[in-house]
Length: 462
Image (cartoon, rainbow, N blue to C red; front, side):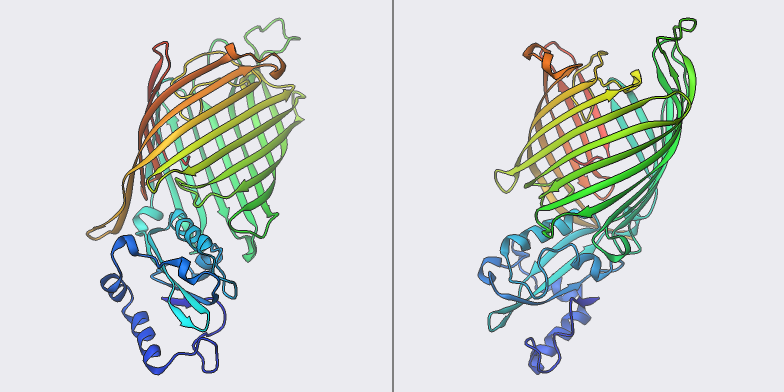
């Protein structure tokens, strides 16, 4: 499939009108598809043009080929390089990385043929990943030395309808302790406009009944979220996300008035929450970015509609900065700040330690505020390499080596936070980037006191 943005650029009288020989060449390229491209293209490290030599030229059109299920507009709308604009080499490099990071393609190549007169075209060639990796169920496995093994299955349809939408259903279980499930629909361009839409349905049930401590016995509900762009830029994006959630919850709570049941009693509640998020994103791609930054400020207010009257608020700040050191090395700086306030149930008090937290740390202490910092070095060991699996299709894979240092502290008041409250860990691991689950991490982390353990995390993005 060969598609263009805008009107037919090859009609007579247009600025891009081609000679008979040139028209014949373009038609043969469109008909032969991957055969001509794969056999005539330059070596891999030269898959894209020298974009700098075309800087400032007017882009007459953007042509897309190689797409099987993905609609051309799904690709064109995500690109910062648009028909009718001046070519910016930095934008084009970003487009190359960003399109690959969408997760639908095993390879993306962009070239820029010159048409003369200070004008050019952009040719985008993609290899789509096989349906086996985008539309069929796959197992989910996470291991945390503190929490144990969690396993399940997930059915996730990537690039639903060829529009970049995601549909997913999952079920996960941790031994005889708990199980959870849910369904999710994500639309990156809602109603054909640059608006985002999320619909999440969730269900959770705790199987065992601890003798002490408050906990959630069961919960189910739904959450809807919209994304509203506050910037026109595709390279430096600013988004505002309002959200609304409804939940039915059964939990065991210990409250001061209840002196007859010190272990707590069960309460059934209906709760509503409203949230707001402000997101800044300049990453060159969503999966394993190598440059840019992402920052998110989030607040959620929870109010009881029925049952025990409780009102509390969550506050979060998350930041990641990705610095490209060399072509294969990325330095990552992370900072997270959490605070929870109000009539907070004790099971929402935070702890530290886990695959997305202070890795290698183990403690039962909990508090209402948490501060985390992370330094990570990521080195590309291999890839992205593309292989052909018989009867399946192309399979792309990359392998990264990582080393990291984490630090964090828990407190019930930031005013009382001291250096002695901070704990630090260090470790390293291997990351596998593939269509199987985007990112699979195998890590080991520990601290100076001999505490530590392994983590196996599938389907995560960092």
